[in-house]
Length: 314
Image (tube, rainbow, N blue to C red):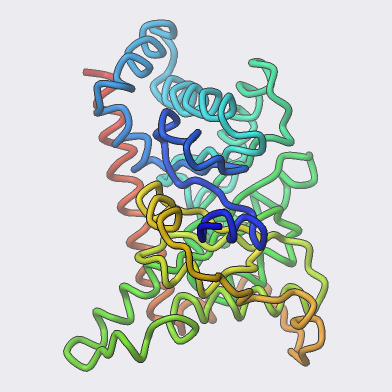
């Protein structure tokens, strides 16, 4: 049995792509998208007509509504291939605007429901800012489930758990990137691999804390740089993986041991912590990696959102 099949017996495998034509070969349960993935997809010949057709069908609407219809159109195609859920992202430029995030999330769900898709099959992706987490808290109470993304710190994870969020996406690879760049010539790849990888350690800490305290929020490791990071998180609730790394796992036949164990985590003695807004902002401020990567992630997604806007209006 290859490692992708073994992983599926331990963890829910999610495809991290806007390329729905590629999904079937990996048979993931869920799929996630983001502005960068959608932008990449619509620039290819396979998907350009989808953008063109959607824009043509909705001329006269406000630009932001056309964008949401493009995102939902991709989501609808993905849901024809995966049996589970698709994650669709609210514009990253709204990451500090709770009211606008709520409005866009409700509209996206409305578009899916108008197309006959139950809200149970959609996760609204929102950046893990304080405003984003509080918007998601309200959405969850309405039965609109959320995927809190751009999550780099323990305080973000704790706040999401306290808010009753459905799912979080800690970014393994981007954490790894920061520590590797920060260490410079002193970085030892061998010493920082597997369970010692800083991104892996962050997800393991969150996973163990959630399981020990009975927090129902799902943990989905994201943003992987190599298969070693994935192998070191086997047993996590979900892992969202790019097609390239899914393909690599399919070619590996070695045994894949369980790395994260929910039952074992319940036996740990981890103190319960809580963050109000002031404590959250201070804790995030004290974590240079998380502060920098959150800001950078929002900027990068905002750039790609603006590029998608330009493709629509041009």
